[in-house]
Length: 487
Image 1: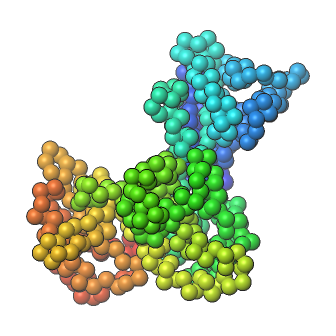
Image 2: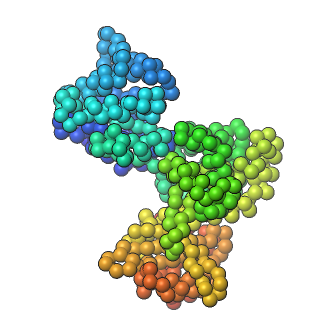
Image 3: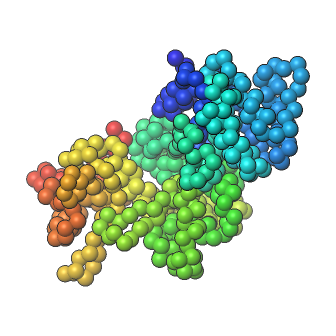
């Protein structure tokens, strides 16, 4: 059993999958792919694995193909403790040596930041494919467990897809994602659910933001939150000040930075539909297919189907820091750069923070809780949790549904397990329950969902009135508070 390092927070699933892959005693070299945005702890995981198992770890750099060959040759010379320096002339020679490392035992061999190497030599995936042919002699006689790791999500997503050379060659495809909001609260050591959600709305669940970039500077309590935002995020002296801009710069496919920043700003301003984004950036809707797809492939945005309108798709930003930057920092960038009125800018923008950042973020956290942590609380296991829009022809209006919980269709119409409304800074009352009841009646008039057991749910960050508490008991409605989300 390969022990997980004591200083590694969580990542139990990722560690166990890597250990299982690396300790596989079956003959024949194997290939694995590890991906995830920067600062999630991928390198820490892989370096730790190699240290525990005596494996080989190499982190590529932005360099020419010739220099990269020289660097990995030097690294292999040190690892093999060879008296004669290894000076490879090409990558087939390198792959041959990597496979020979595993002749006597299963051993992890890691090439980190693999996209740098492939950018300098686009043939490299094909070279690895050739070495990993099913009956190749070096592969058959080796138990090297080769792991290719990268942070360029668009590149790593294509590495095993479609007609890519390595498609069908990998026996491990492991994404290392950001910590979910519950794990992030534990990692930041925040016991107050309201404070934990506020912090998560700003910096999300990227581990290195706390350890390497903010150096464990967390808000002490709710009263310290405003000061923390100013000193840790909005200050030009903080590494976090430019981090959101670097997130885009790190993706090589995002060449037209102005366009991609505009698209993200449109979404952060509440323009979630394709038409709304197009109007904001001044482009036609059909001209946005490529940039939206690129941002999605890079893991920066997600597209979600409307629960009640099959022809509508909305977009949301996946990384909270990007939302915070485009909603709160980019509009005031010249003033923030001078750092003369940072505190006043934040104080005057707190209403904007509530509307454009924390409100939408709280809605998403409620959907995440419902999908991943509510289990069968609403009468069945959810298979999809999303938002939606319901038409109200009689009143010539539409109703936004913040949480639509859809169950598994077992031969008939899929059950609509629950619909919910989310309010962050508003004490919810009986009127919210009345509104949900009206929406449920409208949905039941259609034939898309089975609404016979649809529950009504109120999610609140500020509590519920006594009237609503009483009405919820009578109607068996669900009232979900911040404490429920973090239990």
